[in-house]
Image (cartoon, rainbow, N blue to C red):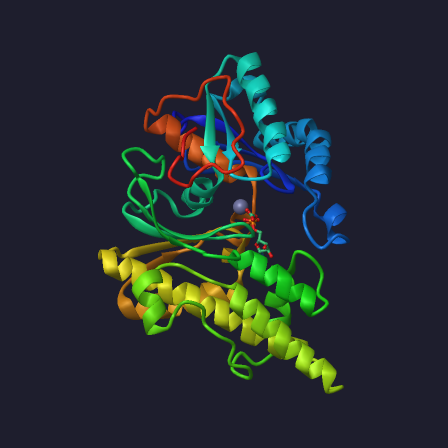
Length: 351
Ligand code: KG4
Ligand code: ZN
């Protein structure tokens, strides 16, 4: 597909400086520079530190991506950038860089939504998105269930069915990891520790799954009660002077999160008569989530698509993938005075 649009995408909504280059659905380069090590000792991302790291990493990361793809910046047909949601200062760095590039190259600019980009990235691995599909987005900042009829957002193409009412799924992983003395970000460490533990040893609560909760919050999530339950359990152990079985707590906690996520995602798809479920965002890298989703979906005749772990966590390829879709579907580019919007709603896919 040499005539498909060549798009460079820039992602700076959190602590990853990502620059991806795609041609249509083909990934040509995915350069990521992360400042995660600079945040680890604080136990969370420090916005000022992230913004500064983006500034330093931006130009070298663009150069690295172009080199890997074997292209010159002037070859690109369009520049795409995450315009929100995310950390305001961090977003600004990416948006300013994308504007400079688009203006300098005289190419169209597409300011796109980070959340829809987590969905669009799957096209790079599994080909054209099935539309309609239900997309479950689970990351450090978001947990939502979306009905997707057009990933570029045209005509209400990204429609929220439910979302977390408190902590995001990734946030719960990070907080519980901290409780267990595991490093930040906690998701991958819990995933690893859980492999040696029992997922049924501790029966942690499944948020918003009681019959009463389902009446009002059928497709919503809540993870703060679960996090508190884990904290109480660990405290009780420590008080009694017994060692904390880290692997068992990790496995039982992970099971509680994945059980609820998969249950609700499959219920959302079934309720809409939709046969494709897509899972995206950093938590979609979780091995248990992937396994459980596939196992239960197969019984219902629902197909599951999950990008490979490297494409689930924040990267520039996802932004380029969504940008390429904007070009392919003839969407009008963004204005050059495009703002960074830290609370861009999920329904606004093109800013
Ligand atoms: O999508 P992402 O890279 O950034 C945001 O947009 O938030 O997601 C980061 C989140 C973190 O909370 C991290 O702990 C979690 O994704 N995560 C995982 C795994 N890998 C990353 N959570 C569970 N299991 C994993 N393997
Ligand atoms: Zn993300």
